[in-house]
Image 1 (cartoon, rainbow, N blue to C red):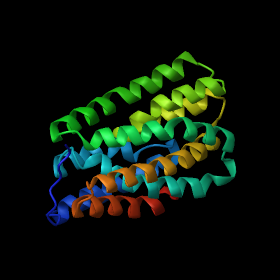
Image 2 (cartoon, rainbow, N blue to C red):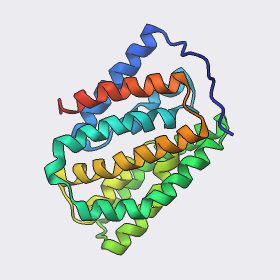
Image 3 (cartoon, rainbow, N blue to C red):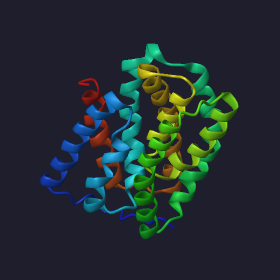
Image 4 (cartoon, rainbow, N blue to C red):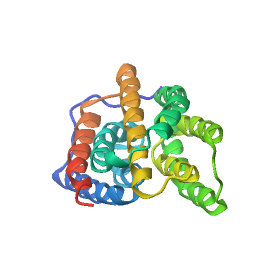
Length: 220
């Protein structure tokens, strides 16, 4: 079972500055590429707070950063693909988040490491093969993505590739990804809240990253 320390966060100003600095950079990068926080923030979070709190922290911050992308690109949102993705992915997202709460700290580290190592090459494979997904294929792929995004971090790059495989491009990809990811983020936060994994440290860092990420996204 995922056990997180419940004491008030013992973070130095240097650690907070490192988190804030990378949060700013990843939010700006995400405003352009559509992803960033989930792939980059674990690099500084794991050494500071350990592996176990990382996915809950990113779940909180992602609601903010994806909301900013949604606001910035809302006129390009492709509602039909967003709805298909949500219907297909939501149940498995809940399952993935719940399974994450059952992991030990070592298990969480293994899951996060495997996810970060595998998602970028997987995205390249999907892109290079040039697959075109119809609605049924997209729904099936989105379901598989759902369990990954529920219990890992950095899986956002996969949804971007799936959306591009359906024919979306540019701002439409970012807007649709953001809309889907907002709902997924809220679901993950709800599951983690019910499971009792939100500690003062998780809440503080998640809100710090999200609070910085929301305005920084518009710089892009």
